[in-house]
Amino acid sequence: MVRSEIEVLPGQRTPILAYAVESGGKKFLNPALLARRGDEMRVKLINHIDQPTVIHWHGLGVDSRNDGNGLDVVAPGQSMDYAFALQDRSSMYWYHPHAHGYIPQQAYHGLASLLFVEDDDEAALRKELALALGESEIPLVLQDKEFDAQGRLQYAPSAAQSFGGWVGSRLMVNLTERPHLKAGRRIVRFRILNGSNARSYRLAFLQDGKALGFYLAGTDGGLLAQPLRIDQTFLSPGQRLDVLVDFREANPTRPVTLASLPFDPMHQEGGHDMAAMDHSQHGAAQGAASPVAMAMEGDALALMRIDLEPSSTPYDRRLPARLSSLTAPAEPAGAARRMQLGHDGKGHWTINGGVFDHAAVPLTVQRGTRETWLIENAERSMPHPMHLHGFSFRVLERLGSPALVRTLAGARGLLPQDQGVVDTLQVWPGESVRIAIDFSHAHQGDQDYVFHCHTLEHAEAGMMMRYAVKA
Ligand code: C2O
Ligand code: CU
Ligand code: CU
Image (cartoon, rainbow, N blue to C red):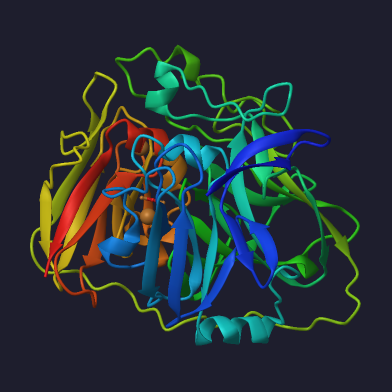
């Protein structure tokens, strides 16, 4: 982990924090890592900056020594060795810092990248659709930043922003503002990570102001059983999407815009000085493709422009009906464990009334058991993308969803993303969401993990809880 400099805005040098990696005699900053399921992963983290840090492998079911949950950190000048087997479903995972007290700043200043795990389902899909990573399969990391006149990243949250979350006005896709992509008239796959500290997106592909339908192929934890046709989806911090867009459906003479549609971000904490976050006028900018730049979550924003070009070779592939052997989740027996999300009225976010305490373990679960959790968000609150370390999970039911979410939902109030394996769950104000977690894993001995909100400022402001898995 180093301090470095790159060109983010044209002609300006931006100081960043980065993972500097050497491989095959070449140097990389924040490389995307590629692995096969079953591979043995060995990483040495050397901390060359002046702050404590640690790498967390977001979404992987590794043991707590390798999880990098922040209970142990790497001091400046020190190092740490990771060694674990990749047992997870094929998907796009990611890695980022996790030293409590430093997470939002370090992530915002550049520390984050991707980890692809591949298996046979993945290979079959790529073969069937003739996909090549980096050509017809494009990873997109969505982030929002704020820069000063010299091109330096600004991270200076006020008290209100430290509580509510830091939202930047410049939308970045792979650290590039409104990039252009040339795409063939074929099926293109996008692997999308919301790597923002606090901003959620309502994603759609627009052509001439109309939504182009696309297919949801996978979520945080890999491929769905079959592709789902949708025309928009939310993506909250920490979550990933695997989508397939068939550009043969589009008008080849007009550009396509990947946009974030306007929405009510539902910042309704009450009892706080939220003047800086008054979103009562949001949504005024309909016409979703207009490149407006305001530091407001929920505004219409253009993220990327896609120009269609004739394919050099004819493309006649069809979406496969089956993507993976994922089955519908079974409901665990027994009463649900309740997780109540709230705040203490004094600037801290809470889980079951408690704020994060490094030394306290409010919850112990038994390895090998299956539990239902009922995650309840307060009516007057903010959305919380709740993330579980150590295990991915399934979504069983959403109750009490706000109207905006309900219109996108199907049976049991579930959103398309809820059909997949996930590790991060957006819980909207007023919602109660039931999830099923299988606490089985191959690790020996007791394990220590955390459950937290992936709005990084919320986690910093207390919305994180330790939990133990008893062997
Ligand atoms: Cu992506 Cu605990 O985090
Ligand atoms: Cu994680
Ligand atoms: Cu939150």
